[in-house]
Length: 256
Ligand SMILES: [Zn+2]
Ligand SMILES: [Zn+2]
Image (cartoon, rainbow, N blue to C red; front, side, top):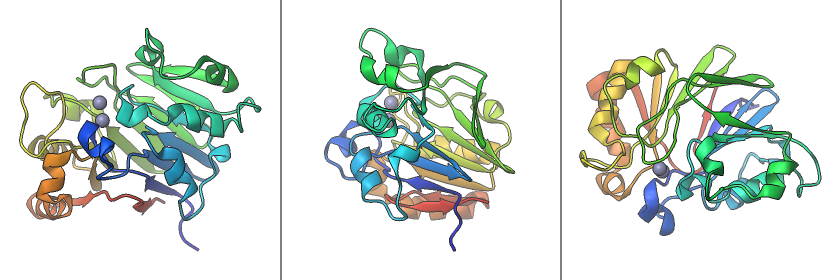
């Protein structure tokens, strides 16, 4: 039987144009380890992607939904996925882990769903949460246009880091420290000064500095799609001598 522990890319779209045109799906990432299920960044279409998934994924088995930041390509299906996690808001179950500004002036979660979950936790620098078999921490805030954090998941012997949308900054690698699998949101190919997103070359720099066992680039904007992410991952692998993968919609990465 296939590994029961995995990271599944329900979608790999990054930023608004790839998302609104669905050039890639935008469903987020599902992490399963032992008996624990976590959905990260359920963007538009997440529910459809989950229901169409093989192996089957059941939102009623989710233990947590985690949001790195409030932008629509990350939060579009947050409400419906929360409703699904709580079995139609009838069962008090699951937790939401979100940045505080997601519930600011324009809350991204409807109030009846906030009441339906067991708890709403706020991400902040150096926060740590235990979700059954998985420990989640947010070692550092990212430099994006809204509140946004690096997510670090520890399960078994694996340390998985997700670097969501951010401008590159020199001490980012230090904050991530050691990790086995590094997932990076790479919207641009060339640096795009003034827009707080990573480009391919700063992603390479980050991978080189962190030196994970495996790096996965995802969350592609149009400039990345034009350059063929798979080809870019191959070039990165040759250059850095690190296993670099370009995520594809529905891609499943088995974990120990
Ligand atoms: Zn994004
Ligand atoms: Zn964003």
